[in-house]
Length: 392
Image (cartoon, rainbow, N blue to C red; front, side, top):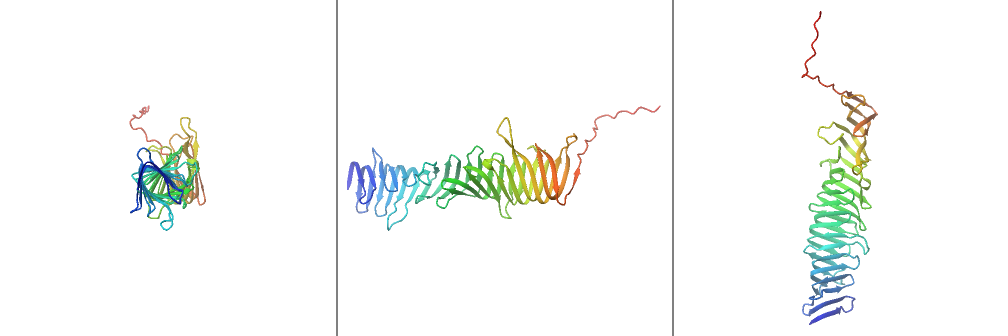
């Protein structure tokens, strides 16, 4: 059976409708072809609306294949797919209980978790698969974009009911806020609450960077609220590279680390297990290096106003507990010869900074140490000694 000149039809016993310039029905194979020449093929199902240049429906399999200029809209969630082709498997009794869709040729998907006006995830991949309204997979140069973040990888999975997503194949995730950050690793997992991103976790060779900090560890776990980074955790097995946090002038190493970053501003770092931190007053190579160590360590930063730019993050305080040791350079206001060197041991050591310099060092519990004054300058051997007048 063939028909042309503009065809309108509906499936008997259902609410499915279609329109096309011409159609053909092949009863022997139960195949229905739809062709759009002047006007596109338009199909409206209970779960999907679809536009395309050509479409073929296989009745026995409840399968629809669409090609060229495909636009498909999930009527339940509002998710939109645009691409060169789509294979759609309808839910039908005795065949399958859940819809499935496949698309290749690098389609673009505006992905919604629910049919609301919220901002979608824009997903692009070489090929994608959907199952139901809330599960999808993508493969081949996958990108996920929204106004607050961007992610990429070779493959991805998204399971909305489980609140879970994963990226593999050189994955990377980047926050797009006023203080951008980036996370890379062997595998990146996403924690979702509805359509909001709450957690980003890198497993294997994790590296996280912010505007004024850098974190490296086997595993890095970032926590977000209101689409902004708030906390970061880093750890790894005993035989892996130790967790490491770096700011402009401070480095911290430990078995595990926890960073407080309210609204993406670094305020505190806590280090546990063989904690060791080095600091210097500026980022130059030859600056005097201070260090502090202990079983655990706390470092606190403050925001210092800067008339030329945004406020700068400055180290304010360091506290070491249990088996605490520290070596610091202390500059006296009344001594121009240079800073003295102080080595201290105790149960707790607290160092307070003033500007870029050590202001006070407080040691409590089994305290001892040594202080070395700055070596006086060497005599100038280029000067001739003043002659001594002869005795008369």
